[in-house]
Image (cartoon, rainbow, N blue to C red; front, top):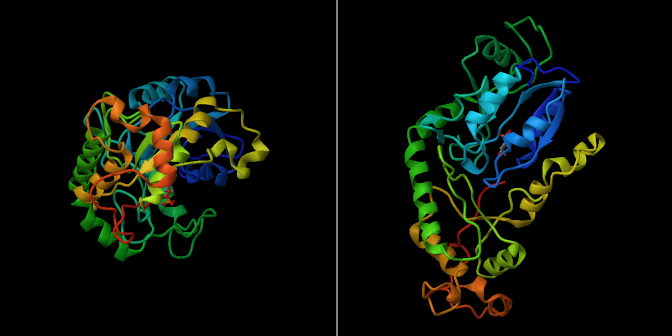
Length: 339
Ligand SMILES: Cc1ncc(COP(=O)(O)O)c(C=O)c1O
């Protein structure tokens, strides 16, 4: 934010449905995050964004949440018409593309995280700012090293955000494997999609123009609690990304952000199933088999759990569901390693 020249009093549009650090960056620059609602694809809604622009708005931070690109065209148009900059939050979407072009190359700048659960990591913490704007690059370099322009002279207050060389070297090696790791995530998503088709849960869908890299595989169901508990009984870990939207975080209470109805409903229904480039087909099949109904394993909708809620509920509670030949051992159970 500071490298983009954000000043106290500026407003920056940001989805509420994101990891809190997206909004935190705006707050650190003493600017105001203005929260925007979501589309059905869980990404920031360009139509709602337009309604949130004020005379103080300086920029917009679209987040390619879960690995799915935002509607980039709409945000590019909005940014150019309203003279706003765009900073892409690519922390969950390394390698994803929009109309064949890598995300992170559309905005004035873009931020990637290498936190250990991300699609690209460095075996530790780290991140990167990418830009083709020389001024932003120079200011970013200064800010990460206490605002210094050389060994002895500091032109502004900065931070210690230097990146460890060893981790950078690890990242360069893993970068070569990014596309194949993403291909594996996409294969897992396709496997889930096939196995879970017909259930009364909403599966993630790739929107036209977007190539998803499935940092998370997030399904939607109004019976989220029940399903999570049922899977937990079977040693299958799930996650919720994120249960408390940014506009409801105590850290921004003083801003009294207005309600966002679609975001508030979404966060009640989302559930992240296990996914990573390291999961085996057998692990994914265990999760999918646990999600599907008790016997019979017919493809007809009436044999699936959702169309028989009472039976499903009692099966979930009493563990009477036959969900495949073996119950996964606790150590080997699929997990969601994300935050
Ligand atoms: C969408 C999003 N933005 C920002 C961040 C912050 O990344 P980091 O923890 O590397 O600062 C994360 C990571 O949790 C994220 O998922």
